[in-house]
Length: 408
Image 1 (cartoon, one colour):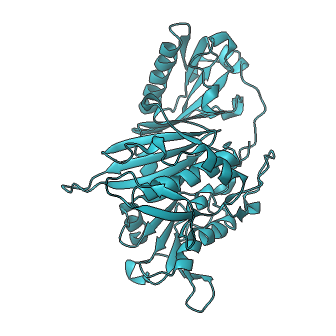
Image 2 (cartoon, rainbow, N blue to C red):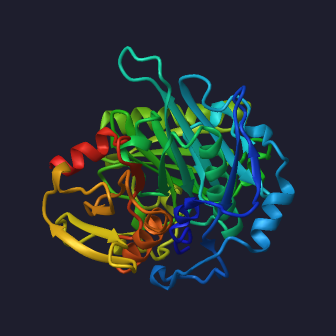
Image 3 (spheres, rainbow, N blue to C red):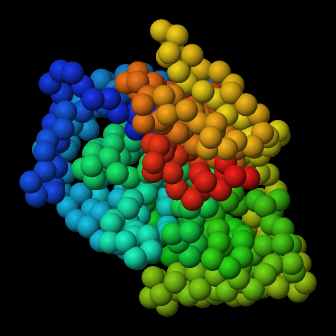
């Protein structure tokens, strides 16, 4: 299925409202109330077999989706209780316009049909100050309602944390190194969480093929089509038939991939209370007549992901400014950029072709702040790499990823 998140991160745009809008009660003792108005989510998206990212449009958030989210949300979101109180990671999944805690035993496991909010709380050095990275992860098959709600609720959590988090958009299969570092591995399954196997009889389970690729802490686990063309000698694959599990080790696979796959098989056996059996296969000893291959088909689904990688890897920096009286977005420079080139009076969109940083100067105007992510979105939709991670960093809160990128 084609990708559908359509830069949902742009829903994180916030503007201090002049009129009376939704008030969010801050959970800190002695905290104040903020007036906020939330803008911009994708609207009217259909689900064609292939989705053209360049047809994406943004609309005001004042839609049926907004009303449904508000109706489903209490005056104080109970899901946020304890959020950001101590060092560690917290994950929530969007369910019917509501934020629900994701089980800790499933941290690192995501479903393509779902959207998630991830908060990473940490301290630097000997400082006792808590810092935050706030991500939302969009599955390729996530619905408009799900990723729109995830964006809306991410804004809410950011507000509750005094606007201190650095915000990030993560797209399935294109996650940032920062996001990947939180987990020993990432497992991506098709469908939604409710389609999981945990309480289903093995003989009723729908077969699936899992691809293990990577090394050390970054072994990615991804469900792929049940196709022979997906099998390659450099990686490890698990064919999960419910009551029978095959681990196929490619001749060129590494020990980390094999170890991760073996552990995954053990988890499946444990979940199924011993009803499932695992057989480990070595590529050199298995022919095409083996049940592992006969369970696969010859045809493959189209894989659009290869289309979304930048051909030109030169860093490009764009300036957003309304100094002339109207909003102007133009190319500032090509090639490496230094902090000295950034002007506190404007917004800069820095595209490294592997990630995009939206840098907001301390003296930017209200309209520049409001339109920063909108312009970044419009820019990305015209490129060949619209799926790259996006981070929004106000001046003074730049992280190491940003510093490394502009120093490269």
